[in-house]
Length: 439
Image 1 (cartoon, rainbow, N blue to C red):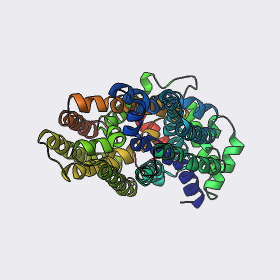
Image 2 (image 1 turned 45 degrees about the horizontal axis):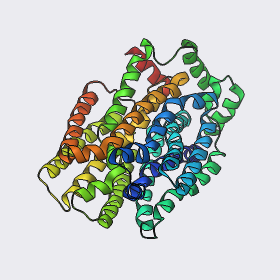
Image 3 (image 1 turned 180 degrees about the horizontal axis):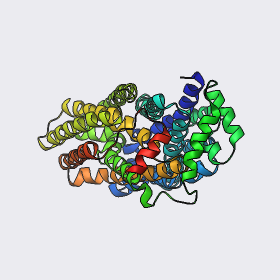
Image 4 (image 1 turned 90 degrees about the vertical axis):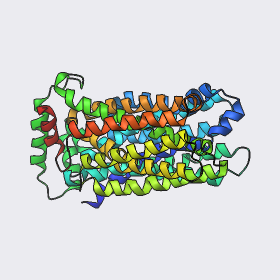
């Protein structure tokens, strides 16, 4: 694999670092902000904590437009700007409404990044390496989650305004990311879709100087000519990839992953751990996530997407069932952290490693951004609803019932993997287009 492809893929995947940091850093300020502004459970969950997720929904729904119109590269740069503005705005906010607006801006960046970054990487990557290159986006997400938990822990004792520093430090990686993103080339497949053939040839030759560029362009054009450029993703022809994108995104969030990441310290405290121990165990979640994501990235092009989803689904069912039992039977101490670590490992090696790779592979070139916008928006609508309601559900229904519902949904995911999900490893994007349209 070309070093340049690896470098460009890592740069695009750094959008995932900002994504992961932005989503989780708020967990360290969770209870402090509720106390500071005297918010009710509902207002705190939906507005203060959840507004970033609603921004993510908007970013995911509309992120396909700039990704298609202005290109993957330009959209990635704009995403970095959104994250920088959000970090500074959140840190300086003096009331919940300004804070929520700043977090909403960051959410726009998160939603758009789930479209632009995987699309860019999948379009520059060789078929044999595409899984692990796109999965680096997920690796950066979980690496940032660990860094965010660690940052929150280290900054937690610096004084009354510790929460401002927790949120504000995100501006540093955001600015660095913008600088790096300026140096990557435009996606050759996007350039070809815009008729910019000579520019595309230059990029393709940089990617692989030994490739027959004309043959690659002819293959792209052969598939492009079969498609009506005015068609949308929502027609019968593309029903199968739409169903696949919807279901993998649906099950991703009904595992409860974002609720756990957002409210890990609260869950630990409800299981009898002190505040400091809760933050420390949250770092353990981040480390576990990182280790098992690395394992998933290593295995995704060897075992395939479907096998990882089998492994993750079974481990989900076991861990979530144990978490449910822990709350029903009032197990305290080390058991809840252990079960949560198992749950995080199940997610990281399965859904976490697979989702953004899979969605970036199953749509045709000219509708990839639109298809990813659909899959991402499904994911983020649920990622907004479930964590926003989680504090209220935890208080009203209790952790036992909440985790039992998540475990039941993972049984359904296992059936989806067994009977519907195709294997996509090792095929070019054009070959996969043929496979999806035959269904």
